[in-house]
Image (cartoon, rainbow, N blue to C red; front, side, top):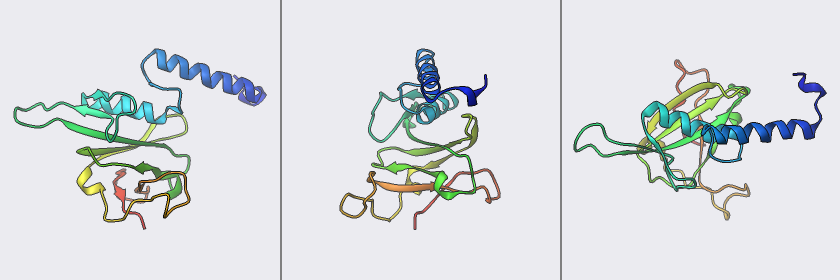
Length: 165
């Protein structure tokens, strides 16, 4: 397929059709850009967990305990498509709005939705003393705790969070 010859309307129709088919196959759950839905599905599959209901506050995947007397783990998944891993702005994931989870999984995709890197961290090490953004303190459209994943210059492919500031 020669993408350059397609009109904007044709490209949008292909995108919409692809998302509809991915929804039918259970790969994504919404008609939104697929990064978040895909990351949630991949994390649930990799961890043997269950997807939370759509729009569940604070967590996306529930991983049941495999050992008696061990609590289930609620995982919040943050995803981003990154074309330039050296650009910290591209590694910034959506803001955290609450912390009612035990861990956070960061997933970075390349532009073709292949996993570039992924890392899990306990929520307790992800919450910072930095106050959240609010409508009163920030003119951006999102309130919550901002987070940027670590850059490619780290010794490993880890995407452990870096405190803002």
